[in-house]
Image (cartoon, rainbow, N blue to C red; front, side, top):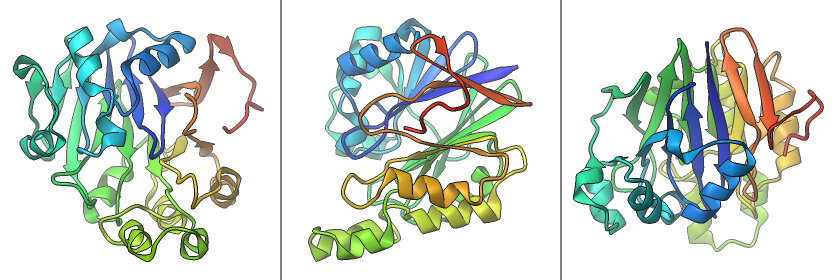
Length: 274
């Protein structure tokens, strides 16, 4: 019994996450173009025909950029709150628009998606837990601070896309204007490496096998730095840095271990973390 996950892209230039069982899949956010989404899935041996729904976390462009085209082309239902839809200014087919409620599971075939509120500078931001086959995958990005919802759901995960947006020193000494630095580091901004690490070390489940560090800032973080930081505390948990330039491998999560493939070829355990 397993679930399959990959990050198709992760960063301020676009976010898109894929979670599937053997028969159906969901996308969380579509922040890259339809063409790029298709191209990356094809390279991984994944089919859009398996995708049955899209869940949208909030209205920022790096999470919805490709949504109109991909939902129209494949006639996919889009689960999105009324506030997020209004503020997104998206033009979606009304027949494809679906809503969801905080903490209430949505069934997509044999997958179950639980939305929950979080702190972020958007109109109605949500994160998601996707479960199936006795496993739970978290998509926990665009989080300003660690609230009780984040702690509770993170502690249930077998695998998680976890935001580690910025290194505090790099942000403070970097080139961003003061107002933007304050926005990023505020309670409704993004998680720092240190905040993400504290969540990981204090609240992870013994069943957490894989963390994909996600939504890294191009200017205020470093993939090698954050990987080293988490690796010191990882134990049996595998740490991967999700790229802002390409898809990750497809990870097969089971209740016993994980394995992974990229471009249809089984990789060794020495596969690059990028």
